[in-house]
Image (tube, rainbow, N blue to C red; front, side, top):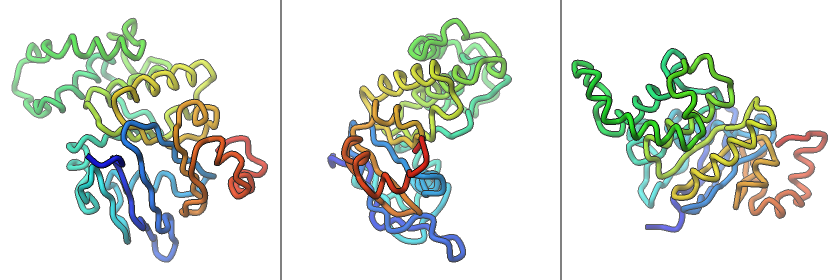
Length: 250
């Protein structure tokens, strides 16, 4: 397998004359935590939408495990093991955490749409769901209605449902957005644990989280790669400092 699990070459996205992503050459090393940062409007979410095929590029290519996936559909990308979380928590608020995870486990086992089967068939997934709940510290909330849980716990549940799909590459879109310090610390540790046997590419505004987790950082500005390297390297880069002048967050 290639050393880089994900690679883009001259990736470009234009919207009626506006270039949101411009000739991006990105390489994500297998088994790493790679952060994508930049000021608001830098093109970070557009890059995620291109990688997961919610948008088609205007030019350029995307390779995953050495295979060109540029024109594949979002469902095909997910089946390859590229699973994404979103800025807004994407769990079912009317279900319990255990039920949310069981749905993800059903998707993985190919039983998602067998509605005629008895609910008893889901009991086989019960232990797996509880193991994932324990991994993210939600055992005590297994039967709570998800919509009644605190925001940080919903984000932890989203990580658990993402893990239930057994991703090879996790794309995390601002996983600590809107959290207090205690929740940020919890989610940071969960991301570290999740990275033990998979690759993570994350968009994150909290530079403390980035400096704690990421082995490599790519900085975007106006859709263009501004700098790349370790946290120490990019934080000392004069162009990066200028891009963030007057801001306390990336």
